[in-house]
Length: 336
Ligand SMILES: [Zn+2]
Image 1: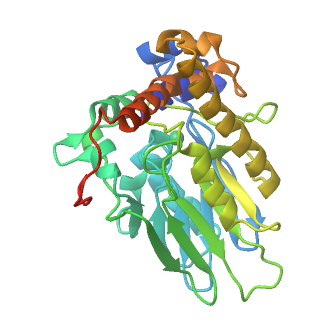
Image 2: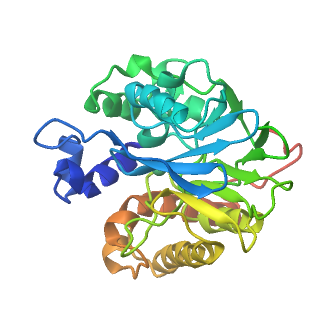
């Protein structure tokens, strides 16, 4: 569920006057004032025809890709009203129609604005129908998050196209946005958007990485682990992302300034170090509740804390598979 990501983000968001204590954040995610800082920054050009702006709350990067025939938006902001405001922001850059909006994952700062972009073809990962909005309505954590942000969770919508693996959107000429789920990582439904334009001289490509990669805060960049993260798979997923990037490719993280492929490689190694540290602690018999305190982490403890439980669960599941206690897979494998 996105709840823990929510709490950690708000606990870290000094702009809304919160303390750093996640318990306080859980009790009152909007802070003492009951008001969340809402703001869209100005568009900054990342590469030719590719832009990002920073939206508050949560300092989330919103991406815009403009081709010769249409434009594509990456992520939607934190409320339907902010999504609608983004539509206006797009019109300050281009008159071309928005031909797609991609939701990189289900967390509030990326997905809650989608209702404000009605009429724009929208794409998300298929897991969103379980984690964001089920047939029974928004999940509990999502509904609580929407109310905290001051709107009715009934306003939330799912992307109209839910993909398992990949999709592609042409933007005119040779400019294409390829959308792919490369595996589990920050969440169980992270999508990566790769922008290529082989006909454009000097365009080395741009990858919108969602929260698989984060370059914020600038002084000590670190991604956020949540209860819905996969500490076991995350570094493999970033390996695949890295495989899509060339030396000239610009990577736009979910939070923080654009980076090059060297940054991705470095953060991938740190993410892999978290995986290995969890395995070391579990093998040494350190309990789940002691793991955070006893571990040696490459990121601040508050970034890693919520990933301990899913990390230990993955290690237990792997051990059960190995010992056969979980049942040896048998044919047919479909549906297992
Ligand atoms: Zn996230």
